[in-house]
Length: 351
Image 1 (cartoon, rainbow, N blue to C red):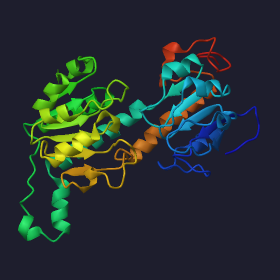
Image 2 (cartoon, rainbow, N blue to C red):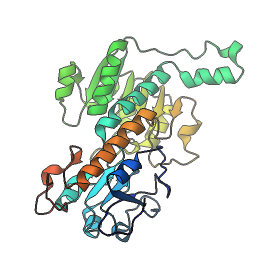
Image 3 (cartoon, rainbow, N blue to C red):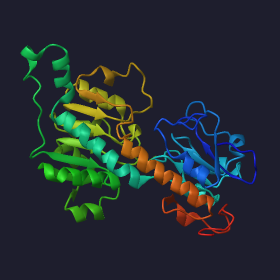
Image 4 (cartoon, helix red, strand yellow):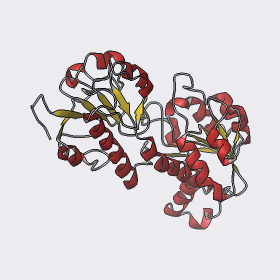
């Protein structure tokens, strides 16, 4: 819905996930709820590459629903004084510093609770596909090799195996609970070297090298930061078992991708399953795509009907809340928001 009224609250949809009709790559996200709340929406101009938005495009909007990973920094929002809210459709906020935005009076929200279960299920799906060599057996069947190769691709199963979860936030801990009935031992690695949630679940927290060496399956569920970019490198893969599988559902930037490809090609590890890459989209001739021991999905494995339902509800709730000059529970960096800088007319928590 569009409106030219400067008095109306207007939300901009990023063109990397929506079109002029309000249709999105996730399906119906409930824009009618905005309209029912008296909030207009517009489609923002397309942004080439992975660059920041044009401040001029933000001049007429109070909030942005960002479907991809468009960067927002203090300089950008300073040049768009009407903007008060950036709402990420998902949990990640790569390229956005929530504290920097908060200091400029702009709220950043995301949807971690809505993403937690679908993303953890994605990790479990890829783990089980590796454990049962699902893709290899699929190829045998459809390739007419039933008689010659029916038993040639036996999986390793999961009973008695060790799963190392790298990053033990909400997704990692959810995955650990899903794995609990399957007879596996779960170990974890965290940035701080400790985790209250892991302690509650009775899960051992180990250093990264130990996790690599002990795990039959490594599942990456960590957030990407400038400090940990490329941390999963040649040394990490060399520490893994030759029979182990590497699974990444977090961010491609955590991995030195050429090192992973080399490890897979040389048999240093048994296989991998990847939903994320660096860069995205990956090049069509990426060597990982030619490997029979790699499962690749397009950073969309968790995009299920319940994902769309729950993330949409969380995003729209946040937009409506901020439009009413209130700070939603999903706000990031809220400790840096100050009544003197908050762009909401009523101040933080105002009416």
